Amino acid sequence: MSVEAALQKAIVGKLKADAALSAIIAGRIYDRVPAGAALPYVAIRNIQAVEDGADCIDGLEVFIDLDVWSNAVGKVEASRAASAVRAALSLMPLVLDEPYALTEIGHRDTNIGDGGEEILTRARMTFRALVESA
Image (cartoon, rainbow, N blue to C red):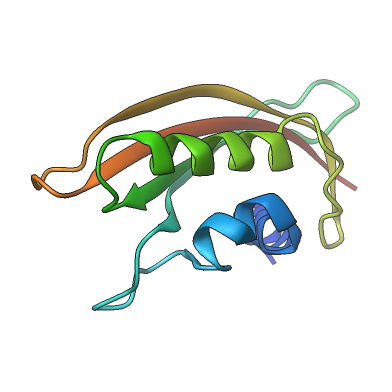
Protein backbone atom coordinates (compact mmCIF):
# COMPACT_ATOMS: atom_id res chain seq x y z
CA MET A 1 0.00 0.00 0.00
CA SER A 2 1.26 3.49 -0.79
CA VAL A 3 1.67 6.19 1.85
CA GLU A 4 -1.04 8.19 0.08
CA ALA A 5 -3.52 5.29 0.23
CA ALA A 6 -2.66 4.54 3.87
CA LEU A 7 -3.16 8.16 4.89
CA GLN A 8 -6.39 8.49 2.89
CA LYS A 9 -7.79 5.35 4.54
CA ALA A 10 -6.97 6.67 8.02
CA ILE A 11 -8.40 10.13 7.30
CA VAL A 12 -11.64 8.77 5.84
CA GLY A 13 -12.04 6.44 8.82
CA LYS A 14 -11.46 9.27 11.29
CA LEU A 15 -13.88 11.61 9.53
CA LYS A 16 -16.62 8.98 9.21
CA ALA A 17 -16.30 8.19 12.93
CA ASP A 18 -16.61 11.83 13.98
CA ALA A 19 -20.09 12.49 15.37
CA ALA A 20 -19.99 16.29 14.94
CA LEU A 21 -19.04 16.01 11.25
CA SER A 22 -21.49 13.16 10.59
CA ALA A 23 -24.30 15.32 11.98
CA ILE A 24 -23.58 17.78 9.15
CA ILE A 25 -22.58 15.60 6.19
CA ALA A 26 -24.15 12.23 7.13
CA GLY A 27 -20.93 10.32 6.41
CA ARG A 28 -20.64 11.49 2.80
CA ILE A 29 -16.88 11.48 2.17
CA TYR A 30 -15.63 10.79 -1.35
CA ASP A 31 -12.42 10.55 -3.31
CA ARG A 32 -14.49 10.49 -6.50
CA VAL A 33 -17.85 12.14 -6.07
CA PRO A 34 -20.67 10.08 -7.59
CA ALA A 35 -23.05 11.79 -10.00
CA GLY A 36 -26.00 13.27 -8.17
CA ALA A 37 -24.37 13.02 -4.73
CA ALA A 38 -26.40 14.65 -1.98
CA LEU A 39 -24.94 17.78 -0.41
CA PRO A 40 -23.18 18.62 1.84
CA TYR A 41 -20.17 16.33 1.53
CA VAL A 42 -16.39 16.19 1.87
CA ALA A 43 -14.27 15.34 -1.18
CA ILE A 44 -10.59 14.43 -1.23
CA ARG A 45 -9.24 16.75 -3.91
CA ASN A 46 -5.52 16.08 -3.88
CA ILE A 47 -2.77 14.21 -2.03
CA GLN A 48 0.85 15.20 -2.59
CA ALA A 49 3.81 13.40 -0.99
CA VAL A 50 7.20 15.11 -0.79
CA GLU A 51 10.39 13.36 0.30
CA ASP A 52 11.37 14.49 3.79
CA GLY A 53 13.89 11.88 4.81
CA ALA A 54 16.95 12.38 6.93
CA ASP A 55 20.03 10.22 7.40
CA CYS A 56 18.29 7.81 9.77
CA ILE A 57 14.60 8.40 8.94
CA ASP A 58 12.66 7.43 5.82
CA GLY A 59 9.99 10.13 5.92
CA LEU A 60 7.48 11.93 3.76
CA GLU A 61 5.72 15.24 4.09
CA VAL A 62 2.20 14.73 2.76
CA PHE A 63 -0.26 17.49 1.87
CA ILE A 64 -3.94 16.54 1.80
CA ASP A 65 -6.46 18.86 0.15
CA LEU A 66 -10.09 18.40 1.16
CA ASP A 67 -13.15 20.24 -0.15
CA VAL A 68 -16.39 20.67 1.75
CA TRP A 69 -19.27 21.30 -0.67
CA SER A 70 -22.60 22.80 0.41
CA ASN A 71 -25.69 24.15 -1.30
CA ALA A 72 -27.16 25.75 1.83
CA VAL A 73 -27.79 29.48 1.63
CA GLY A 74 -24.68 31.40 2.64
CA LYS A 75 -21.41 30.02 3.95
CA VAL A 76 -22.53 28.86 7.40
CA GLU A 77 -23.00 25.15 6.63
CA ALA A 78 -19.68 24.87 4.77
CA SER A 79 -17.97 26.74 7.61
CA ARG A 80 -19.48 24.43 10.26
CA ALA A 81 -18.43 21.34 8.31
CA ALA A 82 -14.91 22.71 7.75
CA SER A 83 -14.62 23.44 11.46
CA ALA A 84 -15.67 19.86 12.26
CA VAL A 85 -13.11 18.45 9.78
CA ARG A 86 -10.41 20.64 11.34
CA ALA A 87 -11.31 19.47 14.85
CA ALA A 88 -11.38 15.82 13.79
CA LEU A 89 -7.97 15.85 12.09
CA SER A 90 -5.76 18.58 13.52
CA LEU A 91 -3.07 17.18 15.78
CA MET A 92 -5.07 13.97 16.26
CA PRO A 93 -3.50 10.52 16.26
CA LEU A 94 -4.18 8.50 13.13
CA VAL A 95 -3.18 4.86 12.82
CA LEU A 96 -1.80 4.06 9.37
CA ASP A 97 -1.42 0.65 7.80
CA GLU A 98 2.08 -0.80 8.00
CA PRO A 99 4.76 0.05 7.17
CA TYR A 100 3.75 3.67 7.83
CA ALA A 101 3.47 5.67 11.03
CA LEU A 102 2.07 9.16 11.40
CA THR A 103 4.37 11.59 13.20
CA GLU A 104 1.92 14.49 13.11
CA ILE A 105 -0.94 16.04 11.17
CA GLY A 106 -2.01 19.66 11.24
CA HIS A 107 -4.32 22.09 9.55
CA ARG A 108 -2.60 24.55 7.18
CA ASP A 109 -5.44 26.67 5.82
CA THR A 110 -9.12 26.92 4.93
CA ASN A 111 -10.64 29.12 2.22
CA ILE A 112 -14.43 29.34 2.11
CA GLY A 113 -15.99 30.85 -0.99
CA ASP A 114 -18.05 30.50 -4.13
CA GLY A 115 -18.15 26.94 -5.45
CA GLY A 116 -18.25 27.95 -9.12
CA GLU A 117 -22.02 27.91 -9.33
CA GLU A 118 -24.35 30.43 -7.75
CA ILE A 119 -25.87 27.91 -5.36
CA LEU A 120 -22.68 26.15 -4.20
CA THR A 121 -20.19 27.02 -1.48
CA ARG A 122 -16.83 25.31 -1.19
CA ALA A 123 -14.48 25.24 1.77
CA ARG A 124 -11.01 24.34 0.46
CA MET A 125 -8.85 22.88 3.21
CA THR A 126 -5.22 21.79 3.32
CA PHE A 127 -3.62 19.57 5.94
CA ARG A 128 0.06 18.65 6.32
CA ALA A 129 1.13 15.25 7.65
CA LEU A 130 4.55 13.90 8.46
CA VAL A 131 4.78 10.16 7.88
CA GLU A 132 7.61 7.73 8.56
CA SER A 133 8.14 4.43 6.83
CA ALA A 134 9.47 1.51 8.84
